[in-house]
Image (cartoon, rainbow, N blue to C red):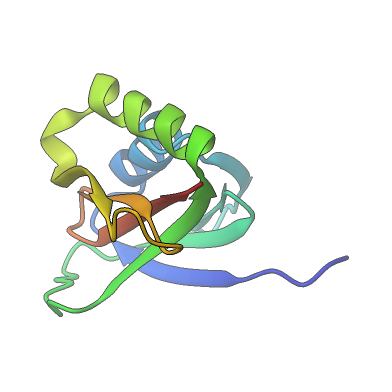
Length: 122
């Protein structure tokens, strides 16, 4: 097994969070545990969703995200725009144009309120 990143987050609703990550962000469910948590695969990162109806992710600088190739970014951003445009906090934007760091990025907010940053590199 190759090492890969794992993140565990509390979510207000397992059902709405699984729906958001799978339908909008195209993640896949890896495991639904009888105790209640759900593991999803988000582009090679395992995210564990744990029910916590009282959670308030109110840290303004806290976010997590994914770096993609530009084609994958465009495909995912189109899916987000089609599936749930209201979740978009920052629409796809070109950053650092005409430099070696040029990329597109966008921010979406999950149902619990976490910010997810998506970047697409050439």
